[in-house]
Length: 187
Image 1 (spheres, one colour):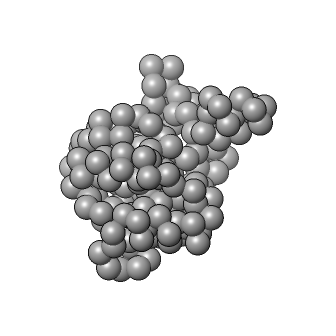
Image 2: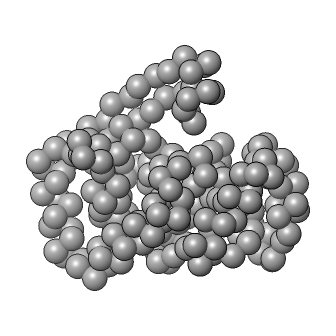
């Protein structure tokens, strides 16, 4: 399955009642966990909000450039973004008819994989309670485990997180560990 097909299906399965997906971070982390669960072969690196894939960003740009999706950006004040939102800008991705048609053709072409992606997205959404920050924290913790390639205690993961300039509180780590257990990813 091509990366643009994975991205378009993920956007479809994440879209709200308005046909929008709110947030780059949500999309990146959701595909990170899909990659972890379904072994999609997408490379990720540690980045500001956790695991990041340039291939996903490029696929999003391609989908925008060919006119399948639109991107709208909402900017918030610094004070508001710290108190209400996870990021200072919210990127919204909106399907148009062309993009929806591509997503539906992709579903038919890759029926079994599309069903796996939808089911896994539903599991992840449920485990993380649609909390993008929690998804990001869990992604950071799992990235550290992958980088170290060995089991680690939560307090050691938090030390490694600081070395990457990732601030994770003990409370956030505990919530992330519980959510990771729900999707069968152990810390």
